[in-house]
Image (cartoon, rainbow, N blue to C red):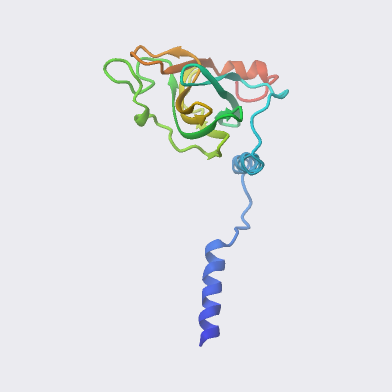
Length: 197
């Protein structure tokens, strides 16, 4: 009877942790590759280093108004806009928030005084993350060529815990929160005409 119970336990565990042999579609395969790249970076504790990759858009991740904590980059893969927060190695990235939309009056949730409501940003669960890189995948559906995004992060570095924002224009409120204006058509120029734009 013990062997039978042991066999049932092993079968149940195998079922719970078993792998699927179903083929991945192209988007799933790209996502899986990106996930593996992020896992490898986190495991080896590598940090962002400049390379020859050309991004559609790139700006500094500013911590505590005065520190360069890393970069925020934008790329297009298939039907997705990929927004990546990358640390420079001196800073670890914690909780992140992202709001994105067409640059009209209501693209980001704001208080009556014009400060962003970070807790109401539509993206708070990245596709993948580690202490040095966070990746969001946002559908291109509904985005016009001219779009805006606000990339917020809680970071910890040499000066302790800080709030960080992708460097850009300041919101109208009384804080230093920032947003970025960009163009999807920049991806066509930077990617040699590849991609949907």
